[in-house]
Length: 147
Image (tube, rainbow, N blue to C red):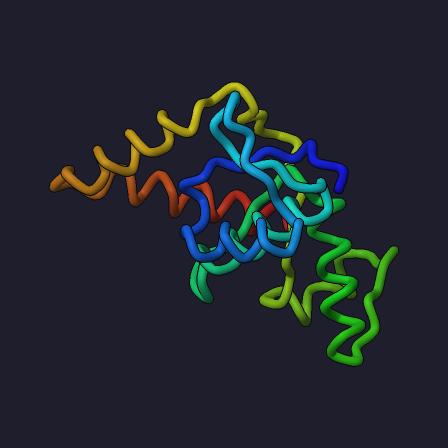
């Protein structure tokens, strides 16, 4: 196992980690206090987690477009479909609601720690106003515009 994809233990439940370890898909690094797995397994697990967290009403935006494209191709093949590449926006428009992954290069959030995102959502939950929700709706509108 090429183990260089690190995952925080809190990302998955204990039973899941136990199963992944027992099948040699993951190992615990005591020094770093996180789990390690192969890049392909790690990207797949995190993509599935993102899909589960997003649910049917939220969009998944990722900086790992290649990994998510691979997963989309694999899932499409498993379902007997045809994964189409190199099409223009007019061909995508009729199936817009079926888009899976969007690469947005306008925003670089690499340097924004997750704690800042969590703090913003906590402030939003405590807020009586709709400022934060309006911010997210406007942002989503920009994503839709970009698509």
